[in-house]
Image (tube, rainbow, N blue to C red; front, top):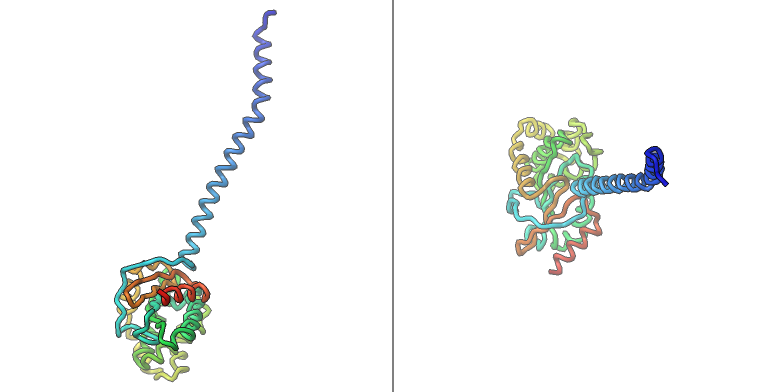
Length: 247
């Protein structure tokens, strides 16, 4: 039996219609898989960015300014472990981590096992007020020494709601609360005499690998440096400290 061209066309059309459904399914599946793959990549990138800011990861670093008498040190200067914290007074995670480090000092500082070294790391793009607040901490140190530096620092962190919300008018009020000479404090702060010191700390933080705040480095007696990124929980930080003390 001879097949006409018309019949061939009809047969071809029917076959294509039958094939179109599974082909469409395959194509759709490919598109969905590709979409999920891209989505997972973006989710991983987002997670990585969060960890950079808040992180709970530890690593190592070698570039940082040696700890000296010029630093703000709480606790035993000869402690086997020194936690060098690069911090921003308007960072909400720094506010949280400040409480964690105070708890660490309550447990390990009194026995002389851990010391806390504070350095400035104001993130100007997010918290333009933080740099002047860092200078205020330096003025408190000049006028009242080590004790007043830490008292002033504690009050700044407990007073601000973070994220660039602290009214600059509060700075001399905080100075007054801890018994500093307010006139001398205002003169110091308005002079900008500690701007270079704050900038030096900032540059040191960058060289030490800081990409967000808080960024801390635990320095062991043997010179080993362990990076603590972000506002780790007390339990996580305690685990690191215990492991380093044991080694």
